[in-house]
Image (tube, rainbow, N blue to C red; front, top):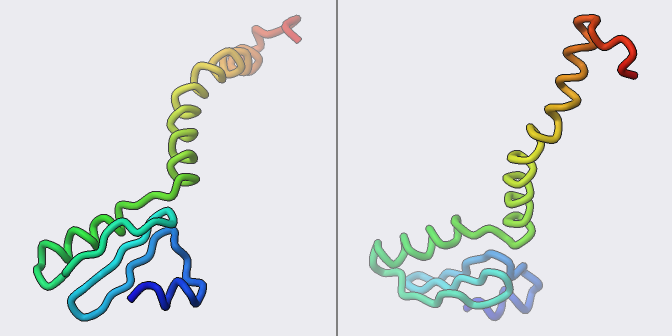
Length: 95
């Protein structure tokens, strides 16, 4: 199980191969779990890990979004202030 799918070119970044009572989880190209899933707890564990996975490029994107979300208000404040002054007519000579 799993090997046949990988031989057919299935992606290895986040995939589950399943037989009636067994599941194999690949993430990031590596085999992460190979579990008997006959119990609800084991099945829930592998399914939750599958859905919680974030590829490295997604993690990097989310980190960049957090970083710029924190920085942009401070970087934009001087420009926003200048635009407000321009709209009120008090920016004469500032350009």
